[in-house]
Image 1 (cartoon, rainbow, N blue to C red):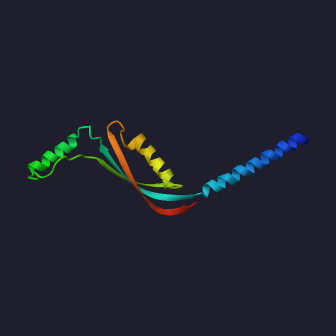
Image 2 (tube, helix red, strand yellow):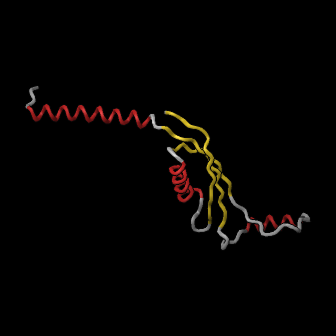
Image 3 (tube, rainbow, N blue to C red):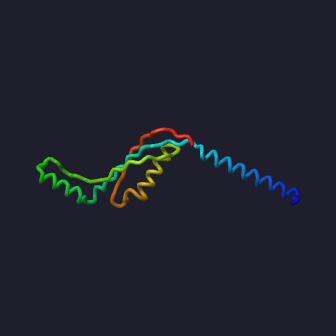
Amino acid sequence: MILGDRGSRMANLADNMSIVNFQSDLTSDIAVTQKYQARIYITLRPSVLDPAGTAVQSGLEHMGYDNVERIRIGKYIEMTLSCVDEAAARLELDRICDQLLANPVIENYTFDLTELLTVNG
């Protein structure tokens, strides 16, 4: 097939673009990421009644533990995340908590992050 000047420039451009895309695919796979241990604490908002906490408090009182007050029951979750940096890990955790782990209408959440190790590739 014979290509004119414009056709050969387009063919060269297409070849160069595929090389660039291939190189960017390689470099994105080699990106340095950090591993973080996340500890997530989910609690009911103060305005929300906690029947589970009330039941536990009642049970403890029946067992003779009269010195225990205001029990609130929550959830504790641990997970490991791989992200490019701490800011990205915090953003990802906020999304995870907002979309799945916590009910934003009745629950609050907080989390702690601890850097574990650096992973290449």
